Image (tube, rainbow, N blue to C red):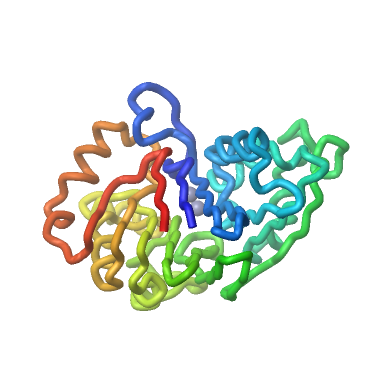
Length: 285
Ligand SMILES: [Zn+2]
Ligand SMILES: [Zn+2]
């Protein structure tokens, strides 16, 4: 599988020179299977990049449907959906998967809520959106999409959590956990040890690392992890490549260089590599 990151920012998108290297778009990650199937996790502003490319190359278009998974429905993870060009292609089938959360009955309701005037000039039931959709309200379960096996796990996050995903193909594994507060318990979430098991021996892990431990106490309960907690998770789970993302919107490129690449804990660890993700990070497993 090929894993590509087109959005690294948490909470809200940023523009400007000082955010250009690590990226200002909010989270979207594409996984392209050996079978040709395309899975996208989250529709932050970064999904525009994938949508434009899919339309220009027709990759993933008919007859293969696109599979769009949501971790949860906070705006930074869904706001790009109206700018995802495949939704305007009448030949495109799109399957959406999202959790049942309080007040939102799965991806369909989140999508309809987003695409409702006056919040959007495009309405879900209007004539502009031409793709055919199937909606799947999901919990912790296993999916088979082409050559990919995808597992989900509940995350520790406000507003009744959400889901993280593990994607496997031919013995290789990729885990994406964003908006997951590893060291704070939520009624719908999981204890730290369960995330260690979920990430066990992952070849690539992307994890929310919005804060440092020294910044953490005032933001405990906001639903995000520290770099140090992600390092602890990765070492306990024996992950190989570990990318940090969901950067606080105020972190500039030079902040990220200083904070995410120079920590002592990152040098003396058991994993092979820790690094801050950029909007062009790409892995082939
Ligand atoms: Zn977020
Ligand atoms: Zn969130």
